Length: 417
Ligand SMILES: Cc1ncc(COP(=O)(O)O)c(C=O)c1O
Image (cartoon, rainbow, N blue to C red; front, side, top):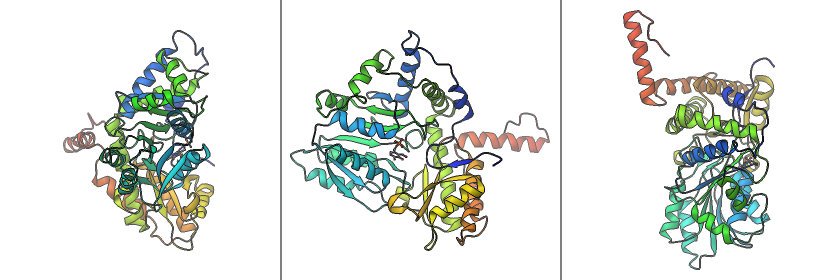
């Protein structure tokens, strides 16, 4: 098909051209005396993304799933009990891993479309005076349902119950897109990956462990080898890796960190995601008049929206028509919500017009399979939202002033936008 494929799955996300170019590198000796410059700078910059001064970031050659496994196997002992809520496919899969690795899971099953039930976490922690629960698992952003959870609330529950369990957070589809605060929220292990907010291909497991988690790992007896924190932190201390690292991805990471931290600024990145997400929600709720899977505004995710299709319509059909006819990749409904939803990923390297392309394509695909929506209604609602709001207020105001000034003088001098 001519033109670009519109990639609107919630990861992998678009890789910006400059990140692509940064990854076109000749292979080099990863044991050279120069190599540590790359590693040490990346690890130090990653601290800013995790918002930690005390934590230790690590880069594993894996996707996010590898870092789930690393968290469990490094910090726990065989048979240990963990507490976790399940309200979507990714919360389900992490719990499944807990069980397959031989740990015991206390599961808080919640409706898909809701998020971490802080009060039930608290009740379980209070009901555990002997502190058998060794780790509490929370998914910051459940990608399957488009739900963001209150990680700080779960930390408060741990503190209120005076419970010493470690707090493990899955931030695979939130880190570098939605505000995440490792130190402030007392997170012990944060798990993420390269292919979402970091705008890279999959292949780097980005994780960060607190001092408490690293202390636990020094005595924890659960077998691990490839994902051993001790091997990784020992090699990283001098700027090396315990095995051959993926060089192109590390150069790509360096470029993506420059974009996130130096060029746009992390807080502006969060504001842009919030603003784009609000436009998508205007399209879904006001334009198409369809419900989101996320049951209440408190759960709305700024990186992915799962849209519930009307009775009698198969969400997979919408996705297939969007892909085959309009070259638009939308996210599928997974497991329990298969066929009932389709997802629009709105994270990474995106702006209004790119998202409008996805909304227009989704609209056409829905009309083609018989969803009764008003043609153009979603696109119009998103446009209305974005025209009435500023993504990062001070930047847009400055830009508008320049435009108005040039109109009043009839001159185009100084027009930047
Ligand atoms: C919330 C969440 N957790 C974990 C994963 C698994 O990560 P990966 O596919 O990078 O292994 C994903 C993948 O989409 C995810 O969205």
